[in-house]
Length: 79
Image 1 (spheres, rainbow, N blue to C red):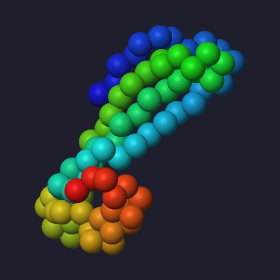
Image 2 (image 1 turned 30 degrees about the vertical axis):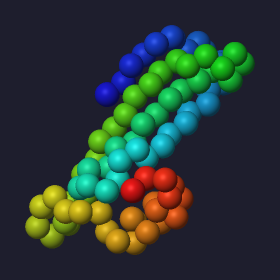
Image 3 (image 1 turned 90 degrees about the vertical axis):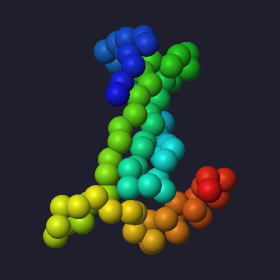
């Protein structure tokens, strides 16, 4: 999913910010914002959704405990 708000121009310096907004279910959602550095204008906003999958069976699974532990350490406000 992507929303183009304002076009970027050739030679624009861009700042791409991303954050994981949902990671506790079998889905992992990452949101993105792209800003132009010169004036701070938000150019694009979007997100991607990923799924955890068992490599042997192909079934959707919960995230590994190790991943959840790291995410909890980095963003303790999400519970």
